[in-house]
Length: 510
Image (cartoon, rainbow, N blue to C red; front, side):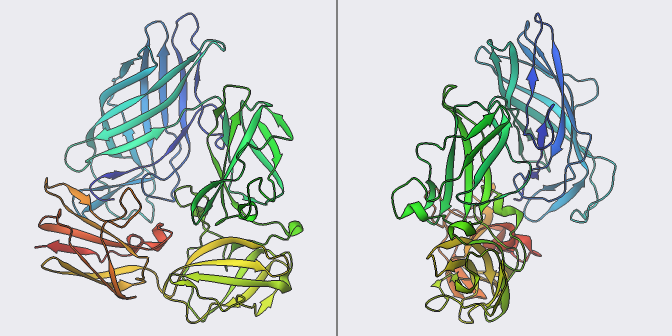
């Protein structure tokens, strides 16, 4: 997170804000045609911010079919905020930040025979005028000269007589404060699926997807996230009951058309869907995500939250698990809300860091309504991550799960290094805790030598003494100098990371 510019936005063209990002350039007799690109929404990259993009951003693109070139007549990308860091924990904030081309410049890239293009051109990174945002408290800095590198692909569809900018990747490099940043602008056209707002999805209920260029032969591929990883629950594709070019409708099956016992498994309750056009070369759309919520008519309970609705990150494919951003004390009374087919026959399972800490048969509610129940979190559940689940004892069906921390938020208050040993004090530590260690490597670069490796194993083995103390050994690749330690718990989101709290992880390797 440190040592780089942290940016993020989504660019859309010629379609409503909810309709993805589409750009169609239609050359006429080889003459240039242009299309304005405006910011429609904000997406996280690479760290989640909640502040929306500032209106007024634009890119003006000109494609000259005769010359085979793509030109950028204007570049004005504005974001609500960005953080620029140099070194460990030496950051400053840019409010209402802007990337723009120098006055009078017009970058032009040659488009190769395969449609690819690439260019590098000077740009300016600076603070624009406007209101400050509460999460961005440092004083704005002066403009910074950077190099703007763009690459992507222009696709020609002779049958339609159109040319489209299929995708574009922007990398920003600069000296001094900006080490590197990257920005992906997706201008995909063709088959698309749109998700204009976050939705819950019932099993066995209608599944409706809006999009573009949907055909009668479009089938849905449905995947759920489970403790064992993603599972394809429609291996042969789900046929539609009706289609239009902008709407696909079918029924999400229940049970799934897969072999038992997976036919009644809704996993953690995270669902990802894309369309495949079987009548158009088996091309596929982008993915849309939903949280499964059960179905009372089919006896399947669903959990939409605890004493608050699940977090927006529950729909994030990088998280892929419904979660609540609150800490729940063992022995405390809380609530669960959602779908209760048989309220009086519903119990609660609570899975902690050491397994199911609910009593045999589940936690019996202390009070209940038609779509909610009150229960006491078992007092002997350990500090750390937890997963809550409803079970209908009449049908034997279980709900999706909702993740939330128990006892304490994960935090780092101090780091002490003696020789190669590191002792970390804080809160919320448990057997699932993973550490990030930002330190200098042999080349002097600031890198994270912790986290997970490619096989999904922690790079740094951690010995958890108790919920307030953990220890580990410095990796041999680290060098003397400033360092920073972060502690993270499942599901590894900002809320279950010490990164989201006042920093206490500063350290120095002797």
